[in-house]
Length: 501
Image (cartoon, rainbow, N blue to C red; front, side, top):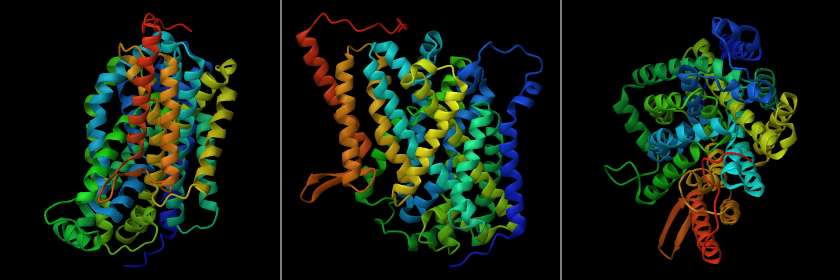
C-alpha cells in the first residue's frame, strides 16, 4: 500500500471542529472557569503567578491530566511510532523510561514542591538560587531550561504540521498554522488553558488509540500476522531476541537518561509546582503508570504500519498514513485532531514554563508582569520555530533527546542539591559548564544524534550522550567540591531550610 487515500472534506471538517473547539475553550477560559469553581473561594494570587502557575491551586484531577499529559505529546503519538517503524523494538525504550520516572516523582517532587511553596519559588532556578545563593548558578539553570525546551516545542510543532500535511495541505501553510494556533492558545489562556482542556486531549487520544489497537489488527489479520509482517521489514535481530547486541546498551542508556531528564524540564516542573499540595503529587505518581500502558499501545502503531503496507520516506508520516489507510475519513480526521491537540496542549505548558524562567530568573525585575510573560512565551515559540527550520534531525524524536542532553546538566544542582551534600556553587557551575559543552560538542560531532560511540577498535558501544555528559558533570562537580573543601574546610553551604534570597 504505497499510496493512502485523501482524507476528504469529512475528515477535514471533523479535524477543524475539534481542534478549533479546543483552542476556543482554552482562550476563553477566564469566562467559563468560574462556573467550575461553584462558588468556592480561590487563593488570592494574581499577576504572572496566576498566568504562569494557575494560582498554584490545581487538585489531583487537573494535575493528573496536566502532569500525565506531558507524556502524551507529539513525541508519543508521532515520534515514538516513527522510531519503532524504522528500528523495531529499539523504539520501545520510552516504556522503561516512564516506569523509572514515576518512583522518582514520588520520592523527589513532593520535597521540591514543599521547598518551592515555602519559599515562593516558581522555577527550578529559583530553588537553586535559594539553596546555593548564587546568581551565576541561577542563570546557568535558567539558560539550560530555555535551550532544552526549544527542540521539545519544535517537536510539537512538527506533530501539528504532520497531521495538517496528511489532510492534504502542503508548503509553509501547515507550519504557519501550527505556530499561530500555539501562539494564540498560550497568549490568551495561560496555564489554565492547557490545564482545563488537557482532559479533552487525553480522552480523544484514548479513543483514537483504543480504536487503533482493536480495529487495525482485526483489519490486518490479527496480532500474530502483524508481528510476522513487521519482522520482515525491520532490521534483523538474533532469533528470539527483540534487540541486537549493538542495541542493548543504547536502549538502556536512552531509557535511563530520559527518565532522569523527564521532570527537570520547565514544563514538567511547572505542572508539579502548580499543584495545591504535596499529597496531590504523590497521588498522581501512584496512578501515572496507567499512561505507560497506553504508551506501549501507541508505540505498536509503528509495527501496524508495516502490516498495513505503509511505505514512506518520512517516518513522521507513519501514524497519519496508517489512520488514513484503515479508518473512514471522518474518524481519521478525529484522530488527527487528537494528535494535533496532543501537541498543542503540552507545547503551551512548555512555553509557559520557559517564560517563567525568563521573567523570574533572567529579567528579575519584571516577574509579576503578565504582558512580559506573554511576550517571553511568544519569543520561545519563535525560537522553537527556528529549530524546526534549521535543525536537521532524521527522526523527530531526536529533537526531544537533544533537549534531554542539555537539561540533564541541571540534575546535580537541582536534585543532588536536595541532599545534605556540601557542593559549593562554584563547583556546580564548573560541572554544569563542562558537562554542557561536552554534551553539545558530542551532539554536533555525531550529526545531532543523541548517542555517542565510545571504546577502541572492535570494542565499541553507543551510549546516551546526555548520560555521558551528566557523568562528566558529576565528576567535575565532585572533584571541584573536594578541592574547595580541602582549601577551605570550614566553608558553610546555605541550609535547605533557609529559603531567602
